[in-house]
Image (cartoon, rainbow, N blue to C red; front, side):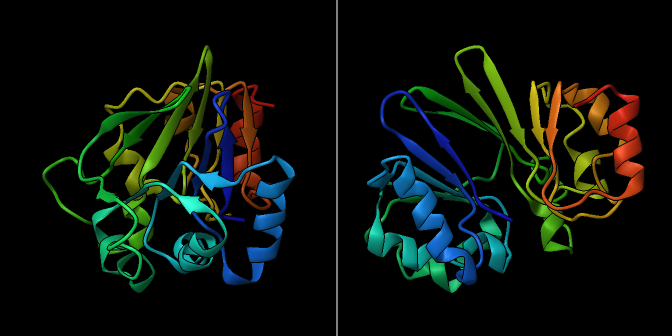
Length: 204
């Protein structure tokens, strides 16, 4: 799946990626289950259909207050179609924003003067979520090339949501050492190498 939601103590709802169109009903059900009537921030971390597939549909059900995306996502029709009535921001460099009780740190691999890489998934925005003393890192689709470009960022987080690729090109030992998570949530079944890396790092 490519849909992650964080619910803060000030009734804010933050959604990372909007999922595939076929997942729309399940996404709405999940958000409604937690009493959400609006989406305070919708963060499109990468330029792929499973990230922006439900942008238009979500805006018909929920009051989406702001959309964050990478520069590539700005050219996708789902974002362009709502840009006139929903504030949106292309995140071109590392930055921190406060959304109610939740702090979001956008970690941008292309913030290194080298520009975008050819593979869209390598241009994924990583998001570090801080809520009080709790920290979570959403790695989106950040694989080997992407991980190497965020090596100077402060990635340390208690919880890691691993990259969505599902293969071994990602969640490297170098990356795990930088994040130093206590718990990892995998997007899909991880490959054996990733399982071994998590076990060797004592990550639950």
